[in-house]
Image (cartoon, rainbow, N blue to C red; front, side, top):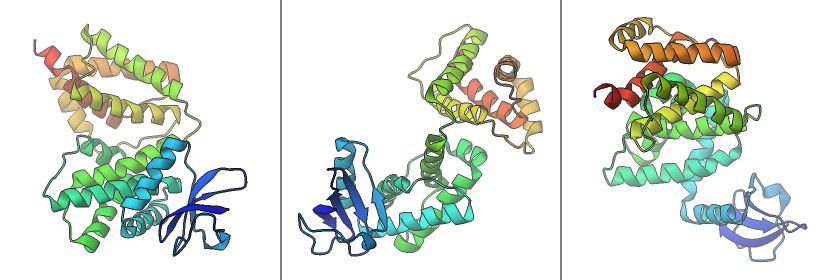
Length: 282
């Protein structure tokens, strides 16, 4: 492989004999490297292969702009995810992790805190990924002295959730879209309305449905916790919403042979109550 250019001391852009470009990472791998130099294979610790020219440019910008310490932290977090949480995702997650963490530290220095509307969902539905997010915040605090909220942990966890979902090849995007569309249709039919696709609660609902659909299509079991009392109380307060959830549960059982748990019914009830609140108040 020939060096195209050194991005920093530990990153180089290379081209193989077939003309394919990749970005190689390794300690001191880019030190004093010039265009056309040969790259020693034994120094390569990781290789990132962009999918297209646009992604390649984006990767190069990231590697050149983000300090090396963020790459070290991202590798630490990824190692924690694999060893402590048994979560295995591609090394490519290091890229968005670095970008996100560098941005979070910059926001912290400017006393800017972002609310995460998916915090509740991430904490309850993806506890292992949220645990990784909390670990990342601890590492960032140890390194930079930054105190960040659980909202930031959920943002980091979301990277792992998306990476996991994207690697589950047994679930096709078409199947996910079909299931989500069917659930939205049931909600609209139940309330004789057209949901506002621009509304934030609708976007939150779609995000939840994406996770929900992939669990169903992957036939993943979701363990019940101790929220039956909450579901019973809310069902009594929002009878029409509860009836809608029952229709969705029946549809899922008939079409996908998947009996959704009471916790999943609770999450659906909460999201549907939010997305139909304005409609029901008229």
